[in-house]
Image 1 (tube, rainbow, N blue to C red):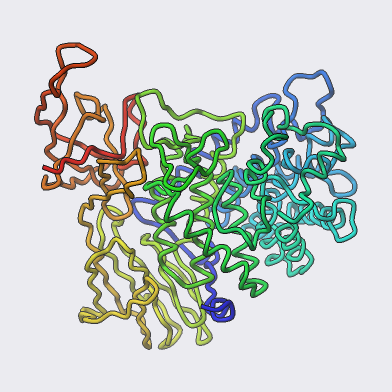
Image 2: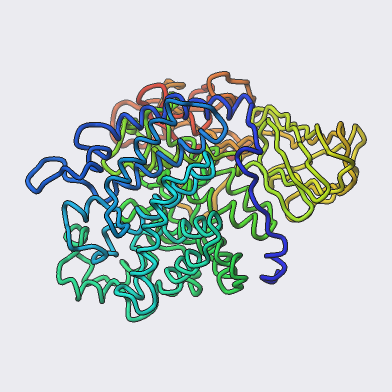
Length: 640
């Protein structure tokens, strides 16, 4: 597909106010975010000496609790998540808390628009001198995203005005011929934020600034090395990474500055930075009609999903860099799979699907959302994983908070914005990407159309899409994604079977004149699936994973009287799915075998005896909610 035809197909997410979510799986989780998670996170941000206190600018050298370079981003993501909640729910207490945080940001902003506490009170005079490590533009990007979200949710311009002043300053500093011309941030984020700011304000200079940051990245001479010479000090993280001078290429790859963005073909380095950069590249490809950027993100997508993606949708197998390892290097217990990386994949996948019209991108989005993202928070919404391993010896548990608290508010903002991922609208088409009960309002040339989606997904694979309102008979294409795992979906329209549904690019597309009362019913089928990894994935060799619909399952020691790594599941063993009210999905049960104990010797000349046991598998997102125990996603595959 050429860039011109891809741009012509471009879809847009619906406004949050056009979508309601009232299903049994997502609605309670989203309400938990609003009523408990955001309150818990606000409490963490308000702790003495932490984020909210830092914005008062009262810290002085020698005081405890030195402000951190990340802190504005934590506050910004919390505001963004809260704003999405306020878009659809009247919550005066939350509204007041957000307004208070915004006033703190306003008070911390400098006369010229600059807004970063660390460089205002800790390192005054050193603005934009450590772009590689100090996250200034990363924090600015999250502030910009929060400003746009708050404006779109509430109509208030207070935060939007603050971030526009900051963006205007950045535009001047990083203009061609400006004092930091050629520079860019070591942690990508501002690039995609500037696209959002452009779309909210119509100011082209913000889009062009985001494009400059992408275009300058990876050009020679390498900016970060020039910056290091000019500064003469190691940088914020320089002393923690002593190999940098002797291993420059590795650390260029770490922040994806080793090659120009449009020339990159392999996903390397820090996985969250990569996801944010690829998201921005996708946005810019669409806005500028840039085929080189489109081809680059397609190459990078293939590298990630074909060689470096966990079965849970997590990514980043190397804890040393919080990022990508070599192809097929996907260790289970010692991998990383940061929650923010899975969130980044969800964000990137939506952009790729909307730009190209292909549903397989949403397949990956769904895998990450239901597994690698949801696992990042406890069932009560107040404890979090930073990394999400696929195996544990019983030592892994979620934490109340982190010194680098990027993941908790990031998860909150994604789930609060879920409505924008469920549907999309293209030229003359209404698109259903995810199966979530609720309604969606579309506006076509002939008037408004409201669709009602009813489903018990992901517990069941049936859904009905009903036209509940149309100003008149409306002619449009209804495109419902059919996931790649659905083997024999059935489709009916007003009770009549569609014998040869038009399946294009992963969607069942039905074009007709629609009237109120028309119903499309689809049964995706929800058989339990056995999944095997590529033989080069050493951690999964001789093992199998269990999936049903979008859900990946795991074994926990709390359900077994043996070590879960000792369980073997025969290939012909029937697997039964039992509804589980705790998770809103199902539990899987099967007959399996477990290695029995030996005579106590470390080694022996006979294999361990085996005994029959009942295997119980729960959704991966639910693990570590019932106390410490061992866990595994990959189960020994019994071939006999």
